Length: 410
Image (cartoon, rainbow, N blue to C red; front, side, top):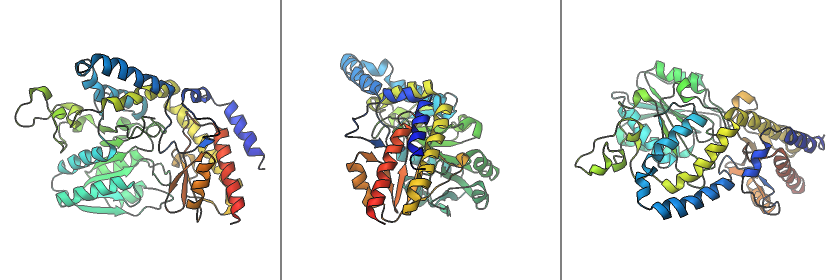
């Protein structure tokens, strides 16, 4: 049976309608990188990104200098936000903006949300959400005198509508969860959870870091109020690339974000006394937009639009299904267990494998050019990115892992 998995990888690659996109990425030779399985943490760069960044530095920054602000840069947070909303988020224009880091945007939106529900004193979140989400909300609760309501979630699963329904009430101002759980890969039912929150009069906010560019998202259709996500994972924006924020149209005149900077002013260049918020999504801006850091996102949106998010999702499910089959056949005999959902409708773009002592395997894996992600306790996240990862690459990486397990004798 072991020989069937390499043959199946070859057959899946031969039938892959997205295979040609792999040539668009900058990829080291196999001697340096045999298998990159951490696309859910940092996406690979595109050849087009290198060209665009060089062109921007030489022609726009170098050639136009300060004039570039009046020739389009000032609008990039909004125009790129609209394009991201269209290509990957199911968001109509005027609701998405590129700005700041994920952490800063979570603070802006969550703080604005709780202030928009005066008299309500509780925020609902889950114990296994990504740390920055939890830490930021803890800080807001301390600032505003709020009560945090914690839902205990299984680290191998994730949040459910039933759990949310059991705790929200007329004191709930905001619920905040991740669409795809960062540890397990659990895919939450956003629409159902939103209905529960809205029935109680609460606002619903979502972290899209592990779904944007990998899983189809329909923010408008699902009734999402607020959302935040990063662009350096499946969107290949590069290390520290700026994040995005979504604020539903109907709420834009109601919510007031707390970091009042000059770029969010109704007339930034008047430099007048006192802060007057801009109308619409521009009000979420604070400081000078990170223009150079937005350039890579343009290349990836071109590619993602060409591929189509539904095709990306179809391949993602095949890739993670292949990981699950390989884990069952090759790794389970060595004590490895799958610490996440198996049902396709419940899993995002990565698979978490657990085994006691997995941390000691990370260095030898990296030394052989196999790069997964490690999450405590004893978890390896296998995150193949559909547009840059082949089935053969996954097979090669898991083959090396199997061989290390065999040599360990445990």
